[in-house]
Amino acid sequence: MPDSVLLLAIILAAGLIQGVSGFGFGLFAMGVMVLIMPVTDAVVIVAIVTLSSISLNLWSVREDIPWGDTWPIILGAIPTTIVGVLLLRNLDSSTLRIGIAVMILGGCAVSMWHPERALIHRAFPSAHMAGFVGGLFGGALNMGGPPVVLYSLVRGWDKGEAKGVMSAYFFVTGVLRVILHIAAGTATWPLVRQSLLLIVPTVAASYLGVLIFRRLSTRAFRFAITGLLVFLAVRVFTG
Image 1 (spheres, rainbow, N blue to C red):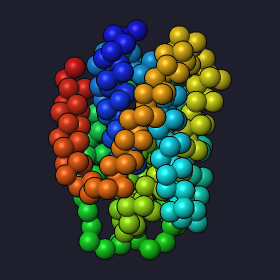
Image 2 (image 1 turned 120 degrees about the vertical axis):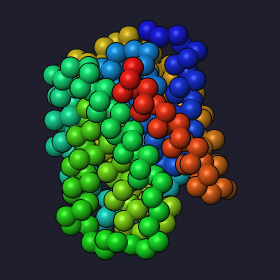
Image 3 (image 1 turned 30 degrees about the vertical axis):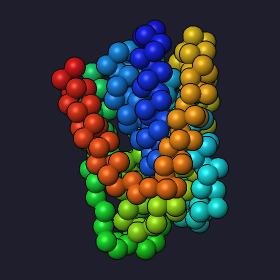
Image 4 (image 1 turned 90 degrees about the vertical axis):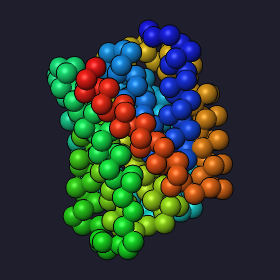
């Protein structure tokens, strides 16, 4: 196991990012953790720990969730989440690291793009496609956010609706991922124990992020996080 203090710092930063923006826990945490531990171990820890942050986010925006637009994304993601978890066991670490770097850069791109109006007005087929792609990368790498974030942007939702959709999607697919990791045997007891110890700090950091989300614009925050994510992507590519 890596140094516990360093791991705690990573999780606190990821929880804060998730609380503010509604996504980014996996992008940040995976981008750093693969530099200090095996990819498969990082995936399991993030899958378990992120559920606490996602649950808090979901509760905080429960009244803003447009369920009619959310279910197509979730239904599209369920089968590919299963495939993604299976891929984690069968792909070599270099391929997984490349996938992590690509998804970090994808997350940077979509988080910096802010269309002035809605470009898509119906869920079909874009919502299903976003869920399909997001589920695949979410299952394999805990990084299924960028396709769903992109979809929320082109739908032109306000920040409450967008965060609500993402939180519901991440919660359902997150629960499924943890169940699959346990069933597949990748969630060993040492990893589960380490993850459980990180849940309380994660919730605290996420709650602080939620408070920031309610009071401040997230645009400047996203600029700073995007710069950090680009740096992480380069480190993952070259590490």
